[in-house]
Amino acid sequence: MMSDITTQTPVENFINGKFLKNNQPTLDVLNPADGSFISTVPLSSSQDVDGAVQAAAKAFIGWSKMTLKERVQIFFRYRALLERDMDELTKLVQLENGKTYGEAKAEVEKSMELCEFAVSLPQIVVNEVQEVSKGVECRIERKPLGVVASISPFNFPNMVPHWTIPNALILGNTMVMKPSEVVPLSTVRMAELLKEAGLPDGVFNLVNGGKEVVEAICDHPDIKAVSFVGSTKVAKIVYKRATSTLKRCVALGGAKNHLLVLPDANPDMTASNVVASMSGCAGQRCMAASVMVGVDKVQHIIDKMVDETKKLIPGDNLGSVISAAAKERIERYIGEAESNGAKILVDGRNTIVAGKEGGFYVGPTIIDYVTTDMSVAREEIFGPVISIIRAKDLDEAIEIENGSNYGNAAAVFTQSGGLAKQVMDRASAGMIGVNIGVPVPREPFSFGGWNESKFGVGDITGRSSIEFWTQNKKTTTKWNPQAQTNWMS
Ligand code: NAD
Image 1 (tube, protein in one colour):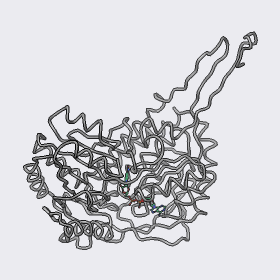
Image 2 (cartoon, helix red, strand yellow; image 1 turned 120 degrees about the horizontal axis):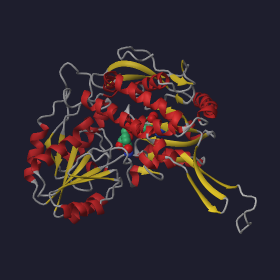
Image 3 (cartoon, protein in one colour; image 1 turned 180 degrees about the vertical axis):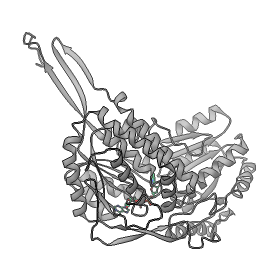
Image 4 (cartoon, helix red, strand yellow; image 1 turned 60 degrees about the vertical axis):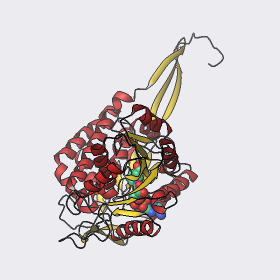
């Protein structure tokens, strides 16, 4: 049991309602805020995946026969348990991910909102029926797929699993979940809480590990659908591999979000929003600002952004990045930009927090005079770093945004509705902000990017997810023996 967050219990797989020891090699799980050891996580095998799929397939028989209304009752209770254990769940996210308490709490709150959408599904998923000719009815019913899988990244240990678990299960599927091996503790607690809420054994199964588990999920003949969230490199691998075995798949990838700042933008609001967007969760959000495109005369806003970064204290209101390797990668990007002629206005390299010397910290970093050919303009850095590219006008700014391979989010800061509308219409991204630095759609509006930020049809949450997690059964019935036989009956 992992409910005591100070316990260094090894993480175990959760299959058919039980935590199971396995003899696979393990990885150490570290607290990125100070580098200390927390636990170990097993690197499970394809046999472990198979065991979980078998349990899920068996559980599907009973679970899929329950009504939607019965299944949601469990998630009403589950949401209440998230609320009851909010503080503990928040601290668990903090412990394994290194973000601040406030950021971790916001994650758990978002998970509750995702449950609220899911428990409303009986109000939304109302099947269709029509008398198409005298005594003949056509109906469409949404049916679950069977055993499905969900694979998540390190940056939102609590929220991202909730993008899939409540909707997929309430719609009648059973699941094999593979959390990031870097942050496996939050999902262990979810398994415990789902059980406490009354979820039948085998409906939710947890298989820990890395690449081998993901590959086994993609290849398993009895898994019907795969949902993936992570980097674009792995999203492409997973999308290709899962669909090559004829599964449906939605795979969310990385991001390079552009914030277009116009000279008429409100200076204080813009500076604080841009800095909050690039530094929140230490820049490790797929919705984080990564490039600011400064249109024409915006020096006064950039000066304010520099002032804003002075309010960020690593180890206090700025959390750590996830690992020593992440810190090294982020600092390498800053160094490359500097040697290619960009100007480092605020430099977060070599940050050490007193008392947490083993932690992985990067201070807020602003890089100015970045050009579109530099790696900091094109690649996902995933740290508290923003690259400023100067543009002469809005057309050039939009062209820069459109030039990115990614397309998760884009935002514009302006007081002009007309100029904002141009960005709303022309930005090549799935989620747009107007004077909002992190334009995450709240439920029931769905989440998902464009271009190389997402592969597959539809978004991962909201109404799209209903399509993804179900298949339509179309039935035609005739109850009137006297009904004339016509061309179709
Ligand atoms: P990652 O791609 O390294 O890992 C994601 C998952 O894939 C993990 O469960 C991991 O075990 C597995 N994995 C890693 N390498 C693999 C391989 N070679 N083959 C098969 N599986 C593999 O991502 P991460 O570092 O955990 O998370 C950060 C990334 O996720 C960033 O790129 C971020 O933008 C992205 N992200 C995107 C969204 C979105 O909504 N688009 C949301 C959150 C995070």
